[in-house]
Length: 358
Image 1 (cartoon, helix red, strand yellow):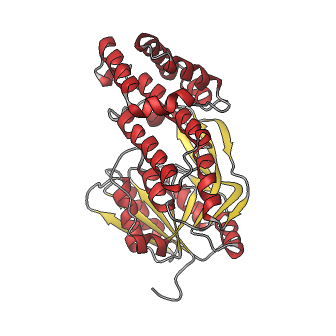
Image 2 (spheres, one colour; image 1 turned 180 degrees about the vertical axis):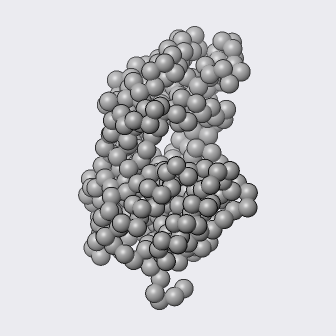
Image 3 (cartoon, helix red, strand yellow; image 1 turned 45 degrees about the vertical axis):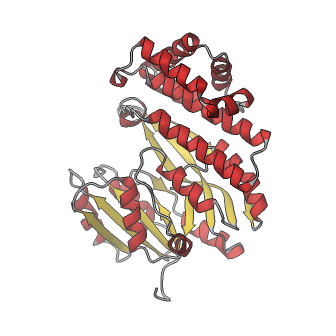
């Protein structure tokens, strides 16, 4: 590595985002902190994303573009970024989001105080209607803390998961040398690639900075995200997520009743979402199939361990769902899932607010 390596490498996988890419890149170019490089990994897009990326590269010498001849998916695009990165820290930004102009400056300032393995910051969830108009925003902000003790990190991490902070990649900056030394890479898996990477990365870190800022603007669009996508293996993927989190707690010896109660609440949320998704026509499931699914979940040792002690934090909807699940009534749970599905498909904005307890 050159001694002149930048402090930050921004990796931006890009597939089919010609509508949003320029705005995302401009938010990086406008940073008040200049010691960065941006690597756009164009992942075999069917539209003009690749051409646009090349044009954007010409506007700033710090921008590089790597092309995949065919689409390889988000994980492989990020892995390509890791291979080409030269910064001390690496950050994976989505190509349809934006960031405030002083994000890198604030992260750099925190690293002067504590040269941590991981930096975490907050974000704004910005919801958009199907016509593209802005609907509302929700702030997710961690408290400001600088960790240099592994036990403190281990005991605190479950809180980050509960606050929907642990599971993302784009609200974190990682030590690139640490990634390479440990050969961490993104697994090719849908929906949970971020949390799988984060669990592996965080198992043995000894320092972490939490910044009480919300510079990342995470766009959640009704079309293509909350209303149209169907993932047939949604439940087994999220069951794996909970099991990995539980195993991490065991590895750290922090699998206390309190922490398991948090995991139980999160697991209940994913089960409820699976019950709702089972009502989608694309699932191919009838009422009998949905009841059978419930019975199989009820027999699962993970369910039997975590659900009886589950807590819902501040979500009234989840509290009701947990009571329903703990009856272990397949009929009641399938009816509840159907009701949620009606709300999700008919009133997606109301669904998104209710789901997050707002």
